[in-house]
Length: 262
Length: 290
Image 1 (cartoon, chains in turn green, brown):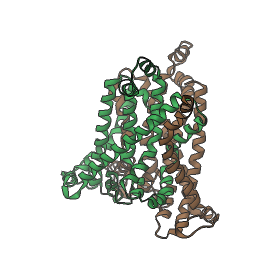
Image 2 (cartoon, one colour; image 1 turned 90 degrees about the vertical axis):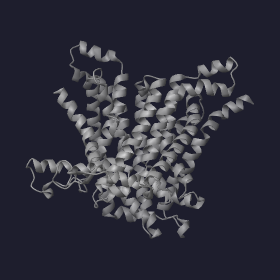
Image 3 (tube, one colour; image 1 turned 45 degrees about the vertical axis):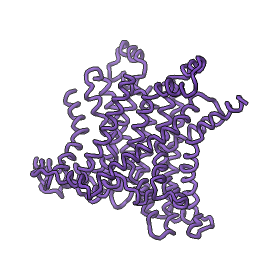
Image 4 (cartoon, rainbow over the protein chains, first blue to last red; image 1 turned 30 degrees about the horizontal axis):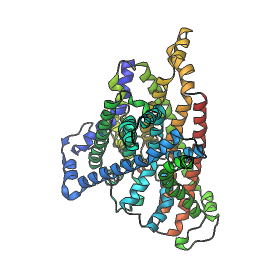
């Protein structure tokens, strides 16, 4: 019974992806065949054909999301530190403010701010898209790093300072190594959040900034199963690689990394 | 001097994040609210009015959209919680033996929502894989006999996609908290004659409930306010609220835009209720020191 249940769960989790993978390598797969009749790699060839620019867009998106991740972590770090080690007026208000983007849909916010972005000249630019992508990442960045700071405390930094280390040395040799697992976990969540955004990129980028999600979307919309599946396979693999690398990095630093998850 | 710096230090550290939250996030909500009230100087609308709200609140399309969004989000989040918690229990029961399985369940979490929509489409549409299996088994004789689960007015395709994405997320946070809950409670209960399901139902689950509830709120609010899945899998009538808002927003006639903003304000209003619940739930968690 238990074995059956386990296999059933695995089937529900994996089967859809398997069918999608099969769709990505067919020439045609008409009703009512359960398995594809004729295999072809035309979709992948099309994706990697330089004239379609899809591969270049993929690389651009990876860079865009990497910048978003770096920037979000950079500003989340001091914020998490302030929340972990200081008591100040308005602390609980700040905590709620930083939580808001986790629950209030970014779509309504993006439509509200769109006009101001146009006025400021940052709509349809990379800067505008990066700024709007940073917002949904902030709650994850701050919350995960806050957990890390609360777990580790600041005694070590304090000791190092007492023993004569400079501020920069403390940051380099104590703080950064200590919070590295948290940075990696938060970073991978922020990266995925940015990489998979469709609507806000489309709205704020105005079609001028094209990310990989925006290449994929119309193929799903029009029901082109082969192209949509091939693009999705690459999409999922890309995220999988990022997560695999980050998990390996965390695993090398700490064995019990999962406690930093939200 | 040092004391003054110390007093202002936390604010300086928070400044970059707060600038972005206030000038993009909060400002976005406020500008949206102003436009919904008819204040939209860019196209010459400068008087505050409630007429857009009145119009939308009289529109039966709006209410069927609101109902559709609330219904699909609630049903999908509720079922995702049930499935996710059961899966967490299942993992806990076999945690020592099976590390491979432990990683497999996380796969849907990393699959983007747009791709999840494609998966549902490929499996559950009338020419999808499930229909083909049923045809082969002789349950149906052509594809139109397969009940339409995608683009259907009951939103089943939308719900399926959100469950597939949401349940593993619930499992992730529940499994983590179940592991953290002190073993001794379970041992006492087992010692007093409870079976392992009773231990789960009466001891572990109540202790994990606030965390599960916070997970429910996150996935409910997300599915209520997201565009991609209902746009790709939902019916053309009724449309989900975010889809409806976008249609008004994107209209070539800029004077339509305030109507879209009214709908956005409704989405924001519901999600702010969720924020209040979320904060209350977290106070519960703190109280019970989980």
